[in-house]
Amino acid sequence: MACVDPLSALLGGIRAEGSVVCHAVLEAPWSIRFVDGAPLTMVSVLRGGGVLLLPDGGERAVGVGDTAVVRGPGPFHLVDQPATLDRPHAAYDIACFAADAEHTAHDLGGIRWGTEPDGATALIVGAYRAVGHRHERLLRALPPVLVINEDTEVCAWLETAAADAALRSAGSQALMDRLLDWALVCTLRTWFDQAGPKAPHWYRSQADPVLAPALKAFHARPARKWTVEALAAEAGVSRALFAKHFTKVMGRPPLAYLTQCRMDEAETLLSDTHASLAQIAKHVGYADAFGFSAAFKRHRGISPSTFRTRNTP
Image (cartoon, rainbow, N blue to C red; front, side, top):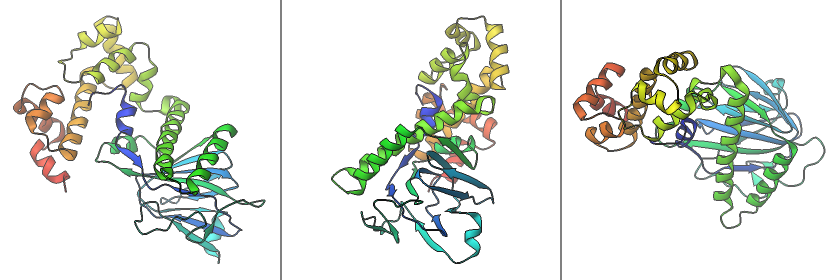
């Protein structure tokens, strides 16, 4: 669990894979359906634009410079306008994870590549595959879709990278996947910053002068037997002031937050590793497997062994 900050830990459980770089030349009416069922899909609009039609019936317009992150796993559409789906039109599917997909520099499921005429739409699409269960905490903090507008320099840089990836030269796919990982981190961090008081407590705390040093110390050394006094010492304030301020900002007392973090990490280790209960107990700050098991059952209502059985393939 040791990490510098919670966002880095949550993003460690999700990666781009098989990104589609799509300079789509589309003439209205048109629609694109995203069919991966990925936990997160990122769509950056370099030129043109359209309307995202979400699985829950929601709609969100996106234009040039917009980057949208759509929470899965339901399929969704990008269309020139919502009415398009009700009349004959050019329809395309995009799947980043399809093992048999032919992503060539000239054709992608009927979508043409290359120089765009006036009015065309150019996209970069990245689908993010889950690695274990850690990403689930991140998804719970996100809306069905979020949109951030990028500046023109960022768009130009992404388009240059996309053009290189389209050539399918050595290493281009891996390069594009890692660039999209970077872009996802930047997009989510910008969105959380702009969300203000609507951002998750764990994110807002990183900018708090009292809480930030204490939480950084905890997340760096989660196995330590932390007390409110020890956390207050890291913050350089009194125990009473720290406890009051922590509860106000985070919505729960300090030790309740620490327990939640430890149980979240324990769930990840139980689901995604073969570590023994004793090893997990030590990793999340308990002296032995017995004490950890009792705490886990109080918190989750089932034993760690039962949880592992239910949440591993």
